[in-house]
Image (cartoon, rainbow, N blue to C red):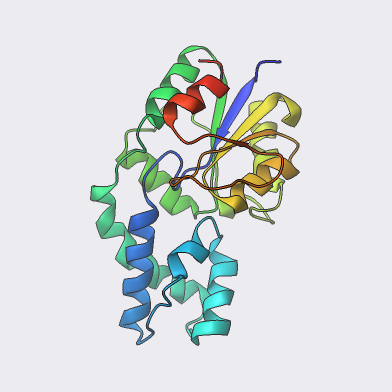
Length: 210
């Protein structure tokens, strides 16, 4: 059965923002006198702001209240958005699916502010654009709620939708929502059980029937 909807993760899947997020995160920590651990980037990929904040509090001694921390980090991220680029092939696939009338949405663990800024930066804003941010749900990825919210907005059954993700956190959310889940990591790696692993835009196109 062909999919009626395709729901995209944003950071690392549609846009190549993970290096910018990591640079902003490290700069924000260092400005507070905290040296980032060597494995921070690997551990932070796909993680929502709340769980990441709790990890930094517990392991690195971050003491700022959550709301102040988020503003502090975004103060380092926003100046970098001008450097943001789409992931190779992703926007072309998005455009082709849109041309075929396939429902689509962006489903992100980022704040609404970041979702909107990033999508505008790469020219991915249009009338009727659907997106789900961490501010729109109670339980972010790896919970199913963000993808179920996207299915509700698109008016499709979750079983008729595809989730496209670059992180284990996101792929687990797609699988939990009962969606056919395509794991498209930035570097070749094993995916979670039940996910379809692709390692190029060409393989992604094939899995989407394009």
